[in-house]
Length: 358
Image (cartoon, rainbow, N blue to C red; front, side):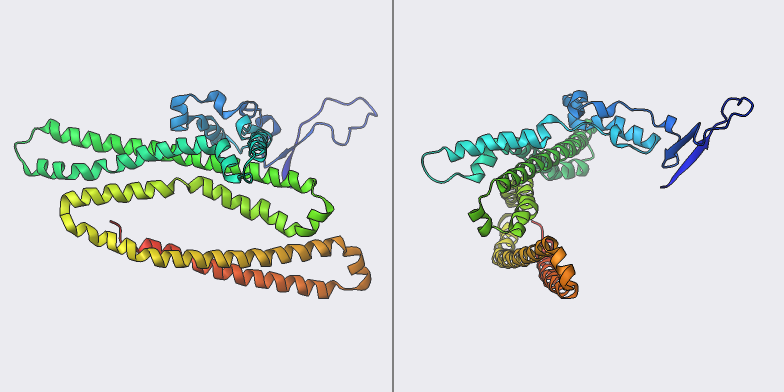
């Protein structure tokens, strides 16, 4: 245990009285005096208690925590309490109510998509509105380029006109930064809630599975549902708005280019259209690789659980080396599949980055 001992001198002892062994010895951790680690009071509040509209937009409610971290190392008690709306119990309760409504419908099977949308769709839509305003402001600069060039070429243009153009571009840039940061904040928060709800639902379901159902679902499959699939749903919730704002950006950009350069605009559009089949093929390849990776991972988790459950028998029969070899074989195969998947993903990202921007 790394720490320092600070010994203070005690009071005078009477004749024949012995000094207690640990009297007046103060142990501090991380090299700091315990008296320095005074409570900050931040750990007794929620972030929303100190945040108004302006504070939420600027994220200034984090400032006290950053200032405290600049003064001394942060302790666990210094961190804000988790907002009630983000707690697993609150999130899972809301999702369970939405799921029960889906199960009670008279027609069709219950829809996980609609259950998640009814719980978290509002925040995702709010994030989409922020992204719409951000993307709209992105075109302020390109739309003003023609006017700015005309202003610079006209020596008789008033100074106020140039200041107006500069002010518009400056304010647009500031607003874009605020909107984009708040967009990602709401996206990541909604994704976190989706993952928390799904993980809790899968865990609660695994506790009440019948013996027949346990024969159909292995522990590895259940573990993958809580780790891999829940993570995928979190990422989907975070980036689902990219489906529509990508189209919005392309349409507006093509319109502005058409006004400036005419039919030459279609050159960029043709490049995007030609790249679509290649991108779709790579996406299908990545999906197949992902499925194979999940199968291998299920087998590895299954054999690991069997080893842990029968550890006593394995030790008694001296089967450690054979089972270790089997686990390592599954692990090696999993790493091989994972390596292939990462290569395909890197190639997809490289190809996407290589497409010339409109």
